[in-house]
Image: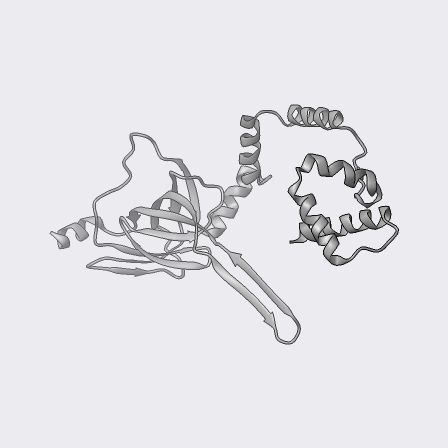
Length: 247
């Protein structure tokens, strides 16, 4: 409909410019119908010659030609490199260097409550059969009750990768079938061994803020970074008495 109205206006102006007498709307509509029945190639020259000022002018705001853009794109690809190089740069950007020495990393990990031993060997089997022993360990500001073979999710642990062996030093309590040892606040001779299984993200949490009558609404999402640990061994209890009681 909009195209038909535009054609009616153009044809009416062209007919008014050629004829000295005003035309009735019925005659304009009749001539419009006959003009629409004609092919487009025959109708275009008349409109262009009669009212060239009605056509919009094309404005070019580009300050350089297409050849310069192609040259700039080639230079951009040459500077950035291939797709493999881009992937390496993205990987580095995802895990930026901490800028800390090994001693500082060890000290910060000890403050959190763990020590990184090293990567797990290909032929190494750290998992041991289940034992009726539990321990309460502290990692950061959270406490976990764990047993041999359990898996726990903690906040993202620094300076450790998947398949790294860890020693959890902050053991608050040990328990078995025949004894319970409580630390004050930590047991110095106890340790819990674990292996890093994966680094994952928790479920998304929606944060919505609103101020009534102020047209203020803000919605944000957050996914907490987590580290999954698998408990492999608990040290610090008398294993001989525990085995005798379990037998």
